[in-house]
Length: 133
Image (cartoon, rainbow, N blue to C red; front, side, top):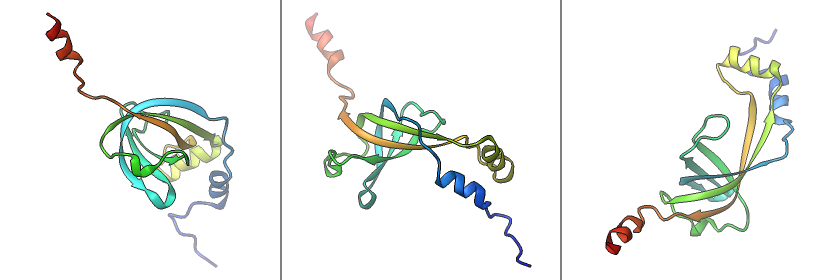
């Protein structure tokens, strides 16, 4: 008789997660900065000032082909436009993950960076007002 490992996730949970059906993406626009580049996977880790739906502030995003990762800067503030893809998990799967693995996960999310714009942080707006007086 083969003994099951305690930390093993059942096949039905793995299947549900791997075959999750994503709904129509929701376009989002949030400010933040780039933490890390993953050139081989064409992905970036981004720290957002506002959290995404599941509460995270740090997300990994796929980068569309139009964006040249070499032109991006770490630590600079950007306004990111991205698609949030969501695949809800069944109640049974969510409850299993919460009770057995202490993972609070009701859905799977994927993010796709579509465009970004470098923001002017600490611009001269305040000094312009004082100069007019």
